[in-house]
Image (cartoon, rainbow, N blue to C red; front, side):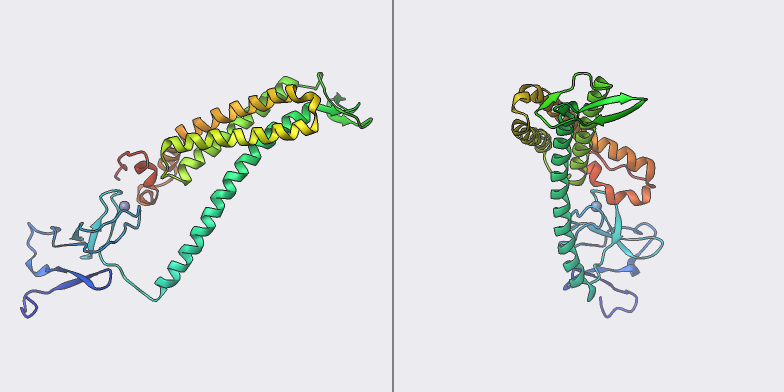
Length: 281
Ligand SMILES: [Zn+2]
């Protein structure tokens, strides 16, 4: 074939040494775009990292470029994999970015725990006063008046007490909801049970730490405090579970609203993680 003048061979270098052959000279209107080669080595989709090995290579009708289509996310990409001096640096950057990414996720998890604990502790702290000091509404302004230091006591006539407690509980559940929704989006490869477990564990750990702190802070108000700690724990677990359930549907809706179809394939995992077909343009 190589010596034949009317057959022009196009060699596709697929990952270094392996080659696939395309013979454009044999093209006819019926076979245009037909399969002439396949990917022979491990090569990963640029959109979703699906392994494209053994997949057929097509010639794009307009540009003439050999392309392969990812069956997972539908993305078209050049069949050949160009290797340059930049590649080793790309790998180094990848390792560094992956390490930073993992630290970011860990920091996010710790922040979620701290935020959930802080809500519950702030609730206790705000509703109690130390020996004689009070939170009052004077001339339409809420102020804390200090008149001494003593044991903590519950201020029963705290201004807008019910509104304050409701606001704290709602905020608590919203924080947990955002935590759950982010978890299913930024770490999409877990099983559903693992997210539920995490959304159960974080509020419980945070609540136990707050309870222990409160026990030292105001042992005589432990029962009173535990009620609020449990309430926060409860709404946080609920919020977290709802976040896990609605996180990805909300993310998909957001993508559909804000991103044109052309750039969506890079977020195809939002569909694939739930075994849903990625909507084609
Ligand atoms: Zn893909």
